[in-house]
Length: 160
Image 1 (spheres, rainbow, N blue to C red):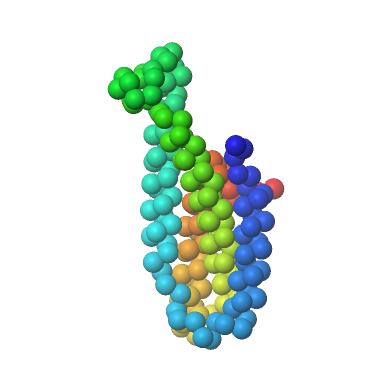
Image 2: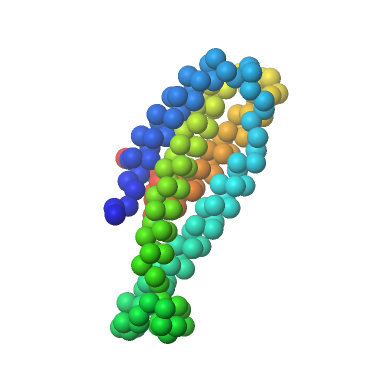
């Protein structure tokens, strides 16, 4: 499985931003205020998945460096006291990372669509609050997508 390309995530986000903007043109007046609760959820997901990925990378590196061929379920530990990694766990984590990156790109796109739509009506309090929530949601989604695509946030933002 190949890493998710940043260009793929950007295309997904741009398409979702356009769709979000089109939907908001007809639905915004009927919607409740944008909830801020998505921001902590995205940040918690980014931190949890980054921590799990770093731990998994250390466990794989320790196994490669130790030269041990421990069998699955043997109870033996590798390298620096780390348990061996089950191949199925690794494949599940890769699938989770790819799915999280795509989901974060979709969320970032819709948040950008909110901001584009609300840019002209920031004088009213509810659209201004929605725009701020959408900007913060966008940043949190970019953090998640950038980490799950295997890049730093700076690299994720500097697509070129």
